[in-house]
Image (tube, rainbow, N blue to C red; front, side, top):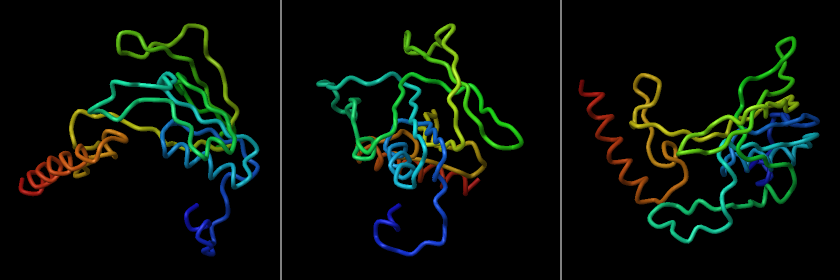
Length: 178
């Protein structure tokens, strides 16, 4: 999208044109996917987030990044947003995506719980994965792959990125020295 806005010629054809697009993830990356899908002429765009809709105000955020409801310029362009929705499986025919089976969830005692009888299907031709993740270590799933900062904890303060960068460098050094 940045190349298109800058006026650069690109050979790639838009991937969302005429499609029903579902975006898994309610953060900034998901918002970028939503805006790009709309600008490429998607038939419909739905952005779903696993967590409940955040409040409009969070006065006690420091030192953490405030968890408040934000609406990006991409979201103002259109599309739908759903909160507290967990994807259970992808549906398809002949190797092509046709939809996602999902269920509504609620946060209880710090854990997500499926709401009984709330399963539903979202029709989709294209699913974009823009979800965050939480891990207890800086080592990723693959051998020799490490993460830190926003890539590991999601959007946060730069001091966290610096601190995790140092910790990650230490872990990488230990891995390479072993």
